[in-house]
Length: 47
Image (tube, rainbow, N blue to C red; front, top):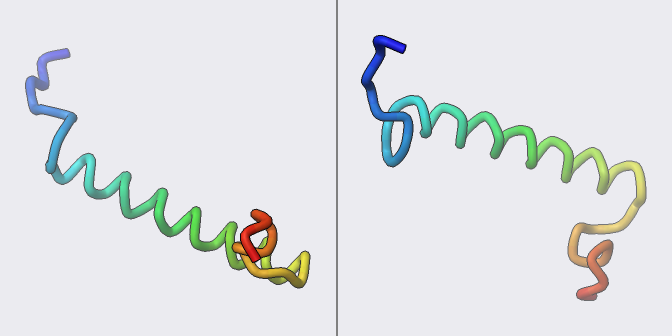
């Protein structure tokens, strides 16, 4: 608990987690699209 560095806002810590989660979401979206044969918008019922 000695580390007083901020963990919120535009910090390197937050940006690295944001990038990791964005890559994970993109990968899951592409895999879901390949498995179902439907686009993301059509899966959500928007098309």
